[in-house]
Image (cartoon, rainbow, N blue to C red):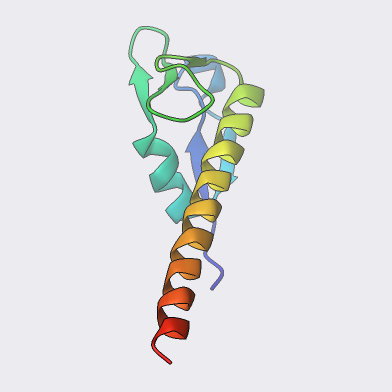
Length: 94
């Protein structure tokens, strides 16, 4: 199912407020679960993502795009793992 993409702010600094990233709502939710806003710098820090140190500053759009890709890849791997488990369960029933 295709969803309308929403605008994701990679930075809340005044000079970047109009510079947003188009992203699917479900991915947007998961990205926000893995970062926190640095109020002083008006950008985001990573929280609990493999390959990133907690507190890693996403202070450029390029870093933020790379981070979104990592979160997306994690979600895809989790979905594949879940489907594999379900398939193995169903196959073992017969």
